[in-house]
Length: 285
Image (cartoon, rainbow, N blue to C red; front, side, top):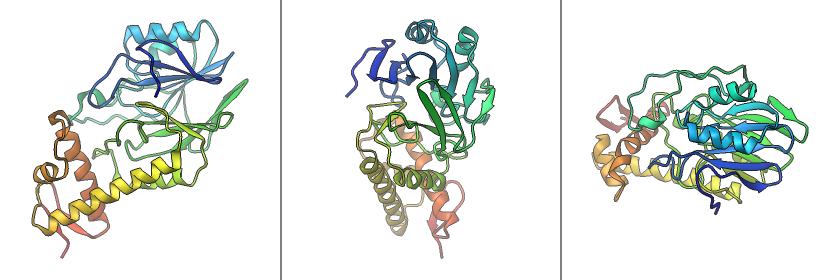
């Protein structure tokens, strides 16, 4: 387990330094983890929220070294807003995921989309940016959001997984932008890889990635099975499903759980297994 207070630069391995943002919540765990990559010329992954204390901590960790790229896995407000002030302070270009603006008054206010995100360069799947001792390659991992990227650091056998794979909880897949079929396909994509370690934006490093991803796939299939069993029992309303499926859930997470159930239902409907639109659902005839 990584233990370091907010704002402290912690070298987790020779090419990777972590700085924890001061934004803990039921959705972000201890906060968003920003990663500095490299030793002489740096890259910054997920600069985090636009909090002056966090920006000061990042600049202290950068310590005057050149920054070649500021990379964002996706544009939720706990990940990308600090990119603009960090660019202003360092002159580094903002590179990575595509912009995405979606009005969403959903269950987690901290995850509204960053409408001010303005990348200088968008990386497509497989495209890279590099420095003297590092290369970061974009791996498209849609599902949590449609614009989500992970970043591979081949020099360390590491993958920075953003919110696609987290070290403390399963990710929220919240329609209309979150897509369960895309999320499952992205997990299958990671299963085919041979990364040594994952560094997520929230939670501890994942040292046995394939076993962990296999567990995530199994968890989602279990949730799907629960939904189909509830529909066979004529439990067709999402709030009733959440109450049965998520016993003991923190009430602050109820809305997010409902979104994930909806994501499963939309996927099942696309596969011809269920019928419904909105509040009430049933098995397909």
